[in-house]
Amino acid sequence: MVTVKEYNDIIATIGHYTEGHHEGSSMMKKAFHPNAIINGEPIQVLFDAIDNSEKLYPDARVDILSVIGGIACARVILENCGGKNYIDFLQLMKTDGAWKIISKIYHEY
Image (cartoon, rainbow, N blue to C red):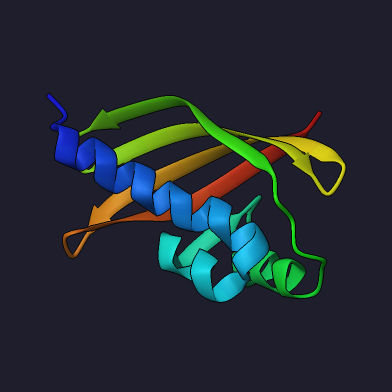
């Protein structure tokens, strides 16, 4: 059973990620574990791309969220993200009492 607090904590973590598209990597980094990866690459690749691009204001929603114990998986839809649309799969882990994204893979559609 996932409590409302746990659910809200995960959604808040994902919110740091989505807000980072227009706030910059300093906001986005709040969502990610330091050793996180994006499509098999270090997450710094994403942070550099965010900091070297125009501010983006995508329409975002969590489409699916599954939580089991201290792990979670979320499918996030980002539409109108610099003229593109993406489906992200985020894997999260609760570590040191906080939810962090440990892996992101995505597909442009």
